Image (cartoon, rainbow, N blue to C red; front, side):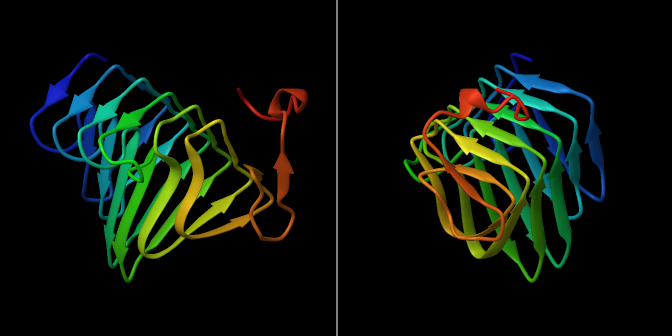
Length: 170
């Protein structure tokens, strides 16, 4: 908590197949991408709370960068993060010939879009995306998720009042 970095990954920078588990990343900032967490290559983030972080560029909460690899975020609460670009998002995904997945996660109350995907398709499964400036930008394939404003995909639902669904963390 309460870190600042003059590049990427204000809270933590994950590379080379590393994992971040059972952690709280909050009140961090970055002059570049990934105010809370910057993940590159085959990194993963599990069971984490990522909140109140800021990036001057993209990915206020998390910036996921992949090149010929897989990046996964699972069972995470990503809440109240900000970024410098309006489409910069709480989670920004940028990749080449790679897979980026967000599973069983709650993405709420962030500035910018909840998810921004560039240079490929991001995959969301069983997620809640609600209360962000906008929900999704770029190519995002969602299944079994609750997306404010709705999104096409198998099992998805559109919500006006997510507080009535106790199955999601809010």
